[in-house]
Structures are given as C-alpha cells and as structure tokens.
Length: 136
View 1: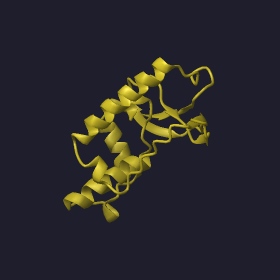
View 2: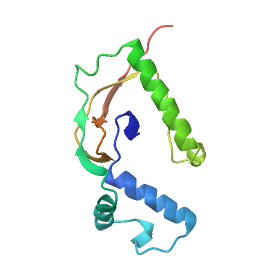
View 3: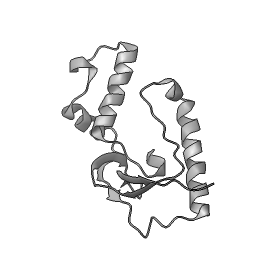
C-alpha cells in the first residue's frame, strides 16, 4: 500500500510477523509470537530504506478528484493487489475485509506514525468517511 501513499503502522507490522510465525511454527523469542518495540527498532536499523513517518491528512487541494486521477489510482491499486496476490493467499485470509463502496469519500484524517519507504513522497491517512446514496 506504500506504493499508493499509505504506510503501515507498527502494530500492523508486528501482527504480520506474528501471522507468519504462527503459520510457519518458527521458533522465536517473542511472547505469543508477537514482536515488541525493540524488535521493530532493530527491524528499522536493518532496513534503513524504511523510516517512521507522520501521516498527513488529505488536504482539500489534493482532494480535487478528476477522472484521470481516479483511473490512475485504480490502475495502481490493481497492480498492487495482483503483485501481493502472487506472493500468497491475500484473498484466502478471512481476516481481510475489502470495502468496494463506490460512493464512500474520505474527508479528513488524523496524523499517526507509520512505516514507509524513505523515497515515498507522501504518506496519507484517511479515517473520516461519508457515504452517499446516488440515484442511478
């Protein structure tokens, strides 16, 4: 998701590691297979192309949507989904929920710390959303 402007929280990273460790039964020093804060700090030191970033709320100047921007976003998202599906069982995991509500619009978001590639220009978050019911 970093490729389309969304970073991952520390909790999302550690839960992903836990899921891998649960699935592979790999021995590790973590309680309940869940890495802690010190492991995350070590991970960031080992992978210096990833850094902690503060997300930005999507400003109104960036929220101006055009048909071309939407097409580009959906093309990038489709490429992203196909790429991660080729690496595993993204659609077989019952913990994943996909919302394809074509009438939902993100309005604003709160800032939070996420992990993202250092070369990534923008890291956005969107927590507040409205849904509209549009006539056919």
